[in-house]
Amino acid sequence: MAVASSRAIDLQAAMASESVTCARGVAWVLGAAMTLAALPSAGAFSLARLPVAKPLNAGLTWANLVSLPQRRAATHAALSMVLSPAARSSTPQGISDVSRWHRERRRAILVAHPEVAQMERSDWRGLLLLLACNAVLYACMAVAPSLHWLGVVALALTVGATASLWQLTMLHEVVHGTMVKSGGSLQSFLLWACSFPSVFGYFLYLRFGHLSHHNRLGAHSMAELFSSPLEGFEDGDILFVTHRMQIAGPKGPMPPPALADKLPDAPINVAFNFFSGMWRPNQPYRNMAVYCVSMFFERLVLVISDKVVAITGYNAFFPNKPPSFHRTAANHARLATLFQAAVVYALGWKALVLLYIAETAWSLPVHPGCAMFITNHGSSTQPRPHEASSSVPAGLGKGADQGGGCQPTRSTYAGFWYDAICCNTNYHLEHHDFPNIPILLLPRYAVPAGLFCSLTGLFLGFF
Image (cartoon, rainbow, N blue to C red; front, side):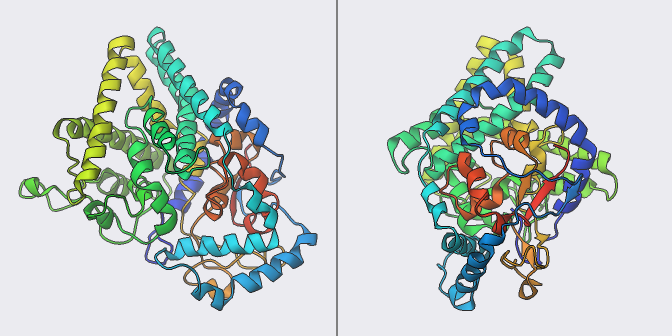
């Protein structure tokens, strides 16, 4: 998550340009091969997909995806009514400026396009896709022992990485209640059971931090997150974004009290201590290597930390959280440890290493999903209004009064194949505007809402 104000020092723009420029060729090849292998299990995705216009320009460019003159009058009327100062003062309290911006956009879009509200419903096809992508991961694990180590790595970087991204996406749908009813025993069971197969997994983040991310995006520092006495994370995305940008405010986590006199008084954070310090401007290959190494190392720390939590029943990175948090974290860590021990016993180390690489690889430049991962919450400058984009709401902070300002959330548009590889997670702006629309339906929503979303997207011209 990036802080929407000018306090944040943002590395995202440089990373986006360098990562895509250097890795787009290998990403296309790997992505195409992986998608062809995995698409047979993506029937639910295919049924939900509607064609949209593809960018004609190459490289990273701002462009207007949709231009619909017949909707312009309704859109302008909606914006003038909903985005007025009076409307801003009546928005719900207790949410961050970024979240309030998304709610204003949502209200404006519903005024102009009330049919979008019909998409806010459960979609059971997501459950089929969740089961299918987990089946693909189990199949990869079963095949791994018979492969050479290079084959294990290749399988993990392609089919495994994409299936792991899809697993995260569909578990994310479970948490949002767009797959099954929120608050029920089935929702809890699916989050627990379908978080496997995994090595470090997505459970802790989804259980304690994703929904708050929608309400508190841009309002908290790393130190607040790790020192908080609340059961949930104020914004769970802070846990995973320090490789993409520098978050404003104090860093974290700090050394546990028991080790305070034995360790330096500095954050125990791989990204802060290693990645940020070794980043060099205009050295894309070096930066990509540093980024990849730090990501793999940080994920390894998570794997080891889970074992410590399983034994001690306590997560020392969050010393002030209540017993209910530590109890849930310990129970999941113990279950994960038993699962991983069973994998090693039955299939050997290759299967476990495959999972470890797959869960990390989709956020690295060797996989197309990286472009989405490092750009979805960058503090980029929203384009100034002109005739083609005058209906796009103003951003936040400096320049907002002139129609520009900070754009805190962004989508990545690169055509059908990219949508398939990312399982529509690249429609991130649309998701934050309408978190209750199933992610499989987001391309449909993007069509009527094009005047609101098109200019504020990132276009990749290599697909």
